Image 1 (cartoon, rainbow, N blue to C red):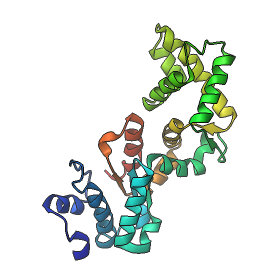
Image 2: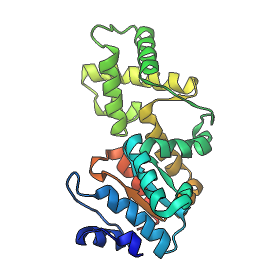
Image 3: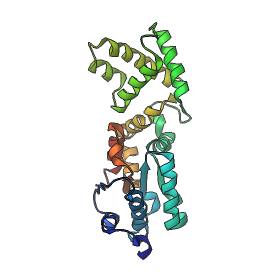
Image 4: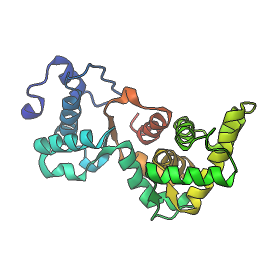
Length: 241
């Protein structure tokens, strides 16, 4: 325990040893938030007998995830390999590779990058005979991405923006775009989190499995979560509360 808690200031120490119920750490840049997370993980494993595979640590970037993995491994060694440490999207992909067939996709689904998305949007605009000078692919993609971040599916988006000509047109593109993605057994980047939420909320057994598995859920830069990310964390951590 001495090694784990060594070098922590009073507030960091308080956050690390708090392991019962939700704990929100508010601190500025460079104040050691990542240090708190890594030492908290080590504290849980070495002093509270929490199994590494019962801990989920989520970050926003691959760089941050790799840094966290390295720091945790330096403290607790090979046991860190059993932990789930990654970005929101990498964690969700792991879940989807196992359960996406529950919502109609094949487990070998593809993930479309920006180039693939633009090509598909252009095809949708052409199929719907929409002027791509008035509705360029980049603007339409941006609007669809915003809708997905707000967890609005095509029909919900259409209803919400009834009477707004531009968004009514985009809703038609959005609907065809999602249909074409499905036909290609493909997801775009924004679908990854939303479809994971759909799998969890429509399959009680899957939700129970991960709810039981992840006894502790730690999120780096929690203040940056959008609606979908917040709901995902809430679902996965519900048993922890």
